[in-house]
Amino acid sequence: MKKVVSLFLLVILLFATFIFVKYSFDSPQVQQSPSRSLKLMSPEFLEKEFIPDKYTCNGQNTNPPLIIQNIPQNTASFVLIVDDLNSRPEKWIHWILFNIPAETQIIAENSFPAGAVSALNSWGKNNYGGPCPPFGTHNYVFRLYALKTNLDLDQTATRQQVESAMQDNILDETTLTGLYSSK
Image (cartoon, rainbow, N blue to C red; front, side):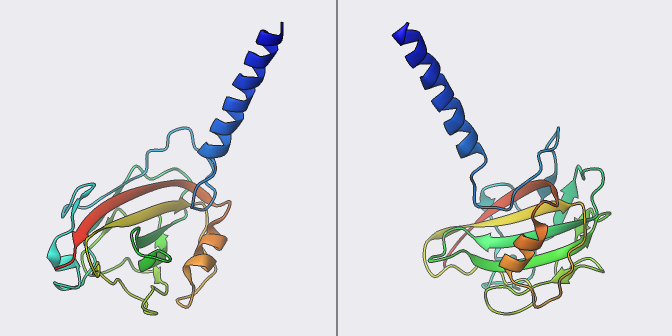
């Protein structure tokens, strides 16, 4: 009998650990949808491939074109946050774009959709700042969030303010990660 109780308690502990790990991550809380299928792609680079120089500090320093697919129903807007996972002590923010209209399927090179707002990046500017690692190869994550609302913020917003305003409004999210090495 003791073995059965011990086994039962072990199963409960493992399940609780799984639930804790599954829902403890470094991003705003996501409302789970039946099919998490939002996709973000670029015709210029694939997942975990190198971002062309053109879109970095060694090139034209313009945003790459992006394609949004499988937009969830009831999406009111999107938020796009681009950051460097390898910068320390905190992630270096290359671009924050919010209130991207829900009908947006393409973010063209060197532009952003009408109505969208570009918030402050780590340089304190309201634009895209391309990859420019001081050394080594860095991972640049383009995070796209589908929201059920627009954010009541302006271009002076910080990442923390944008993420706070997104809380409880996320329908789905996806990422596209590109690599870049210092020259």
